[in-house]
Length: 241
Image 1: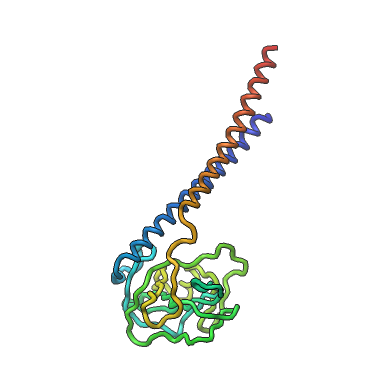
Image 2: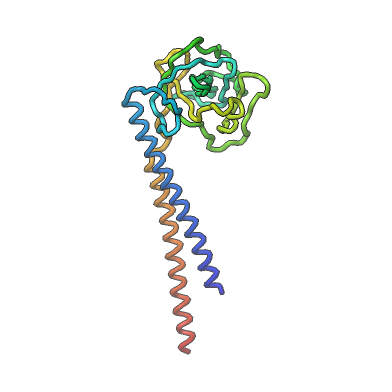
C-alpha cells in the first residue's frame, strides 16, 4: 500500500514539474517573439494602421494613424516607473478617434505625479486632425498587484492602476482597439518616451528555469525508481523464504 501511495505521489509531482517546465518553454517562446518583433519594429518604417484595426499585427508593430484626440476623456496610468530613471509617476493615455468610430489609445509618455497619480503638467493634446506614429503594445501587467485597480469614477481624467481591457471597454465602448500606441519619441504632443521594447529578461532565463524543473522531475523519478527496486528486492527475498 505504501509503495502505491508513493507511486501516485511521484506521478503527481513529476506531472507538476513537467507542467512548470512546459510553461517556462512557452514563456521563452513569447520572449523570443518579442525580441524578433522589437528588431523588426526598429528596423523598418511605419506603415498605416489597417482598416481592420490592430487584429493580427505583431507586438511593437510600427504604424501610423490619422484621427482626432479626445482630450476630454483621457486616462492616467498611475505608479509607473520613470523610463531610465528612479522616479515613479504616471503615463498619460489619450484616446484617438479614428475613421469609422474606432478608438485607439495613445500613450503620450511619462510625467511626474503624486502617489495618487495627480499630475501638475498640462494634459491637453494637439487639436484637430493629427497623424500619429508609434508602436503597438499591450497593457502593462503588474508582477504582484496589492492594491487592486484604482479609478476616480464620474470625472475625467480617470486614474487607473493596472486596468484590463474589459475595464477600458466599459469606458470607451466596443470600438476600442485592444492595443495601445506608444507615441514615437519624435512625435509632438508627448512627454518622456524612452520606451523599453526589450523584455526585462531574455528567453535564456526561461530555458534555464525549464531545465531546472526537468532536472527536479528526473530527480523525483530516480528516487522513486531506487525505492521501487529496493521494495521489489525485499519482496522477492521474502517470497524466497
